[in-house]
Length: 371
Image (cartoon, rainbow, N blue to C red; front, side):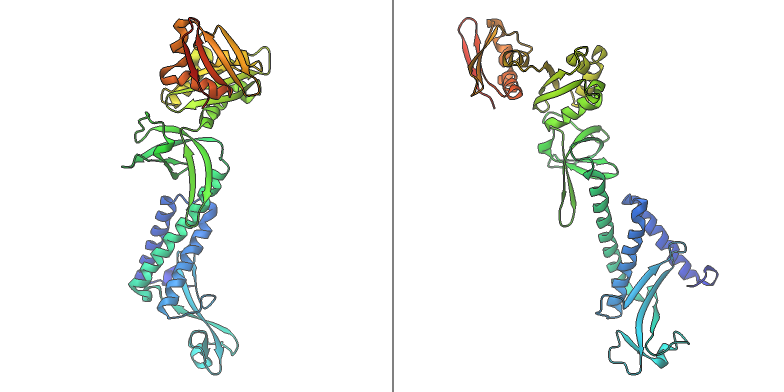
């Protein structure tokens, strides 16, 4: 290897340019320290591929090689040939007389490294190197993305809105990775703007042929569950359990909770002092309404609670095996029990997994079928 003092100005400029290019790739791709060695190998392999093409060498392994000195950024390309008496394959062999031009002590049967100048590779080779390096960067990004988010499947993470597409999809950044939040996974009434910091739920990490796709959501029921688990200490400690969630994302959620300690009020724990906990969660959900109801093994109590804020006069079990019931409410509570476009009764049915018919005290009848 040449010492820095003996390098020409052109060689030094080339090494500085290479250093700057590598640093730029590392920064833009957010390549972790443990992947940097792999990145250098990808660059060296890219240069070796370009050199093989320029030298018209068809052999792929071990004939033309490249090494990059990570301290000096010197690029050493070698065309390795076997010293023989009579050359039959010029791509792999060299005679002794020519071999001694590159190493005076060369002997028959030994390998001789013939240096190839980087500048001699030409413009086409340079483009090949750039293309191969980009492929290497994508490969490392894929590995890093899979590593980061595979451990977070089923969890929520913070993300920053980066941009919005014409189709309505939103690009967010989390852990220095850009992820796509599809329109179908967004709250329909939520207006996300660039710079907004939001919580997203990691549904799945899908390893595809040329990429790793991280499937994220803002409408999944588990987003609400994880937000409560994050905000409520009693849930973290096992003193309060979330038993069920029914959600119409962006509009309303019903969540059933129960306490495992008689000294802990499960609903009060979720609401927090002066509503600080529930308000923090509502803010994360862009104002989505949340009803917290107390779970009960008694279906009558549970169904009555699930229909809150309506006041219930009674619950009649019509078919226990088929999980259907009739609920009676005062006349002035009928519209409240049903809710706007049937939402309250629909969510209550989904929360309890019971088919609910709602009957007003004066005989007016509305039938609500579980969705």
